[in-house]
Image 1: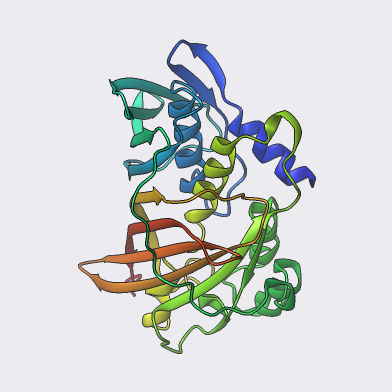
Image 2: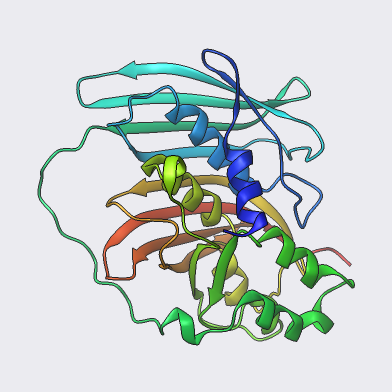
Length: 294
């Protein structure tokens, strides 16, 4: 386990202020606001700590309301909406400087047997044959709008081994492509001992799910993203469904596509598969994506 993953795990270990009130801090981000995946993961940690361990989350729905201040703590307040025989519902509001910046609803379920089917896993090359971020990002340093962006990206993603199957948007800016992308990812180190809890694996995947989901929107229009400076944007909302067990420290394939973009917004859809082909998670996100004016 590297130092960045250790630091991330420490930030997901929220401080309990009151019975249903928690406080978290932020990791450095590549943009001057709190990374959305961090807020979503911390909010799910807060919700999960008010639910019995035998009820893992099966879905979450969230809205990003205001940019977060990375220099200030975030307070998470949990409302215990419902505790049923099979399902538990929680609502979490994240607050900074007296204002809500994020809202999450999450549903948890006890395990039960039922009908099963799934889409097949798409083809993707072995992740070990793909370049690491440290090998890939320096290749595009001359495309970024300012020096140091590649290093900032490496530092922001250092807790995760994330490998692009094809060139990322900033690698082919100016060349429209099919609105589809794939990445393999896993944590930089194994989770064991007391921290090896199912909820933590789910929260870590929630964290990663916000990193690349809107890439496919950019690809359709030949845009490189904020690092290149040809778009500005931010996540608006985020939804996830957790279908089958998985481990965040094993390889997971994130298959992503964009069915539409309009009105200054773009939609991304993702499916996360385990390496043996199990559909583990479905993700949908809409974001503001605008072309800068003159």
